Amino acid sequence: MNMKRQNLKFIIGGVLIVGIATWIFGSISTQNLTYYYTPGEVSNNYDSIKNDTIRVMGVVKTGSLNWIPRKTKLEFEITDEEEYVLQVEYTGAKPDMFREGQGVVVEGILKTPGEFQADTLLVKHSEEYKVADHTGKKEDYYKTMQQ
Image: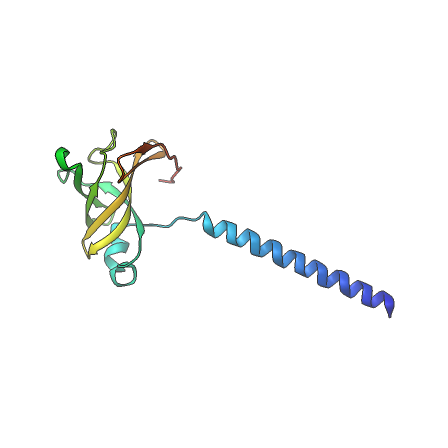
């Protein structure tokens, strides 16, 4: 009986250790995940994400760029492969490499179903995104993205 009780303690201890390790790994993994919506997903899910801070990934639509230097205000449209369009307004330093036809990620909130207020603008350069934030500071932040 004593041997069975000792084996039971080891089994319970092992299950607890595996459970705790799984919980720690799961919480670390979900903290590092960042989901990017496309303009089409934003359009189709407006009601469920309208009050959330989200990231949207798309391509800057040709002919949509409006830069107002004295207000440090950047207005443009982003699109996805399905041709959904989202109007974006960003206030802050214009990234040097920002241009039409380029991949970008914007982070902020939806003002209306088709208008997005961005606090952060990430500009794609090769396989990296560089961040410009609304404070006007520039910091390099690289994130590899799959195309």
